[in-house]
Each structure stands twice: as C-alpha cells, then as structure tokens.
Image (cartoon, rainbow, N blue to C red; front, top):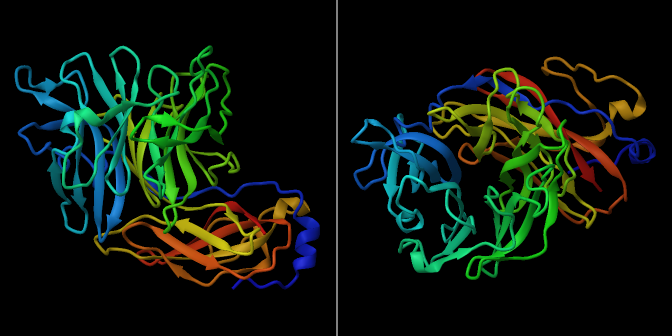
Length: 429
C-alpha cells in the first residue's frame, strides 16, 4: 500500500508539476516486425496471398493468442504485384510458438467492397469480436462504417453495415477503445471539421451504437500540438487496464512542417490529460508512422510506403485517479509470449523534482534518471503479464488528499538484468 509518510510536504510542493522523464525503449526499431509480417500473416484463408500490410490491429485475447484486424494488399496473380486496393482480413495469431501460427478466417469478408478503386482501412474489432469499425476510401461519402454481429460463430453480414454519423468526410481512423455494457462501444477517432477538414484536428472519443451507427457527444482525448496549423493527429490506439478501461493512448501526429512525415506519440491519459511524447520521429527520413497495433509495451507500427510493419518495445505508465478513495495504477511492458523474458516493476509516487527546482537524480543500479521523490510511497513489485504486458496495483478505502502527485515506473528485465526508470504519469489523489 502507498505510505502516507511526509504527505504534508508532498501536498505543499506538488502544485507546480514540471518536467517529463522519457519513455524507456528496448533497442532500436525492428524492421521488419519479427512477429507481424507477411511471412507470418500471409494469407486470408480463402486462397489469397497477403503481400503488404497497411494497418494491423493486434489485441491480446489471453494465453498468447492475439486477435488480428488488418487492412492488406493481396498478390495480383496477373501482374505478380500487390493489388492497388486494400481489403479487410481477420484471424488469430498464436505467438507462443516460433514462428507464430496464423489462423485466418472469413469473418470480415462481407465488409470489403470489391474493385481496384475502393480501399478499406483502419480496421478495428472489439475485444469480444462482435463490433467492427473501419474507413472506406475511394468511394462517395459516407466513409466511416460499423457492423455488429450477434456472436463470433457467424461472420459479419453486409445487411448489418451502418454508416457512422456524425463524423467528418474522408475517413477518421476509427478505433474501438472500450466495450460498454449496453452493447455500445467507445470510439476513438480524428475530429475532422466540416469547414477546415483535418487542419489542427485532435483525437476525440464518443459513444457509438453499432446497431444504428449513431455517435454521442465527443470528448477531447488528445489536442493537436504540432508546429503547423495544417497538421493533425491521427491513428489512435488505446491502452487498457485489466478491466478493459481505456487508460493511455498512442497516436500519430502530422506536424505539417519540414519534410512530410508523421511521428508516433505516447501520452499517459485519454482526457487530454497526458504529456504527449514523440516516441518514433519520422522527420529525419520522411517516414509516415501510422496505425499501430499496440499490445502492452509492444508496438507493431505500420509505415506508409513500407511493405511490413515495424516493431518497437517500451515500458510505459498511465495516469491514475484516486480522488474517489481508490483506483488502479497500471503500467505496460513488452509482451513475451514465448517465455523468453519476464518484466517486474514498481512505481514511485511523490513530488516532481523540477517542481522543487532540482534536476533529476541517479540511483544506481537504476539506469536513466529519476524524476520523482518518494514522498507518497512506493508500490509493491508487480510482474507484467507476458501476454498482455499489464502490471497493476489496485487500491481501495483510501482517504483522498485532494492533491496532485507524480509517479514514475522502475522496472527490471530479467533477460538482461537491466533495471531502468521510464516515464512519469500523474496521480490525482
């Protein structure tokens, strides 16, 4: 449990929060992705060969199995080249074996429109497999769609496709962030303006009824903070805790400055309350990082113009809210379903060092700087689930202090015996 020692001092100094510890990344970006690529995810189960992956959502369904919802190019036998259009494919990827085992299905076959002038893109499936959302390019508006099926024992049906409304024209990168008890889902997407298009467009979320396609009021998730007014955010992907609640987010940002590129960003909250940090910088090489498949701290990132996704591993921590007397602190490490490594973490809670005008400090053998003084306490050591990457610390029956603190996660990778500190997050308590 969090210790309440030195709480008075913490409250006195925690009102001015500054500084940000960087996310800890494991190694360089791996290209191609060793787990999600066209050698592994290589066919649709109906005789068509996958030769390029434009977007691939990867969701853990437990035990080392991962639900795949992807937009792909097939091989055109007449030209021996990728087809011009993209098509939606689904399946199960078993990552406990080497190489991973791909089990495709035809669940989404009715959702794609045949032809070389129509692209289906940014495909997202709910964790229960009952709701699908996607964009459709090259066709007249509407461009964003959803479909609901009664069970995973039947495929999605064309008769159940609904246009999502109201959204901006041209596609909005829809992503399912939570499933709701009434059969609705929380949809994360780009808020495209009817008058200015994607200029300075943020990521927002709203309640979606998949039986009608109707969206409820929007809530701001991540404001655009790029250098140019013509830029915009895109490609949202949510981190969830073990209850399925959205807690943090990856998205991409087109800053509309310099050579055309798109950066991959992590931020610790889903209410425009995180500290956006560029994780993958597309500027130097003009790379357009987009449409990740996030499983814990394992990011399967697609990049426009590339044939294969790329892999980046990291440890990240989300914001937490204890103002009601309890809640969950949650962090994510890379998933290692083949059992070749385990990650353990603890979280320090207290005062941000820069709020006291003190620089970050070292505490060997921890690699990287520590940015938080342990004034509120340290959690117990938690093991990350090797399949979802989640480590959690639940708390209840606390007396709120009506103050804001900072947290930082410290982890150990047992494969390398490396102990390191990663990003900060906010604790409202």
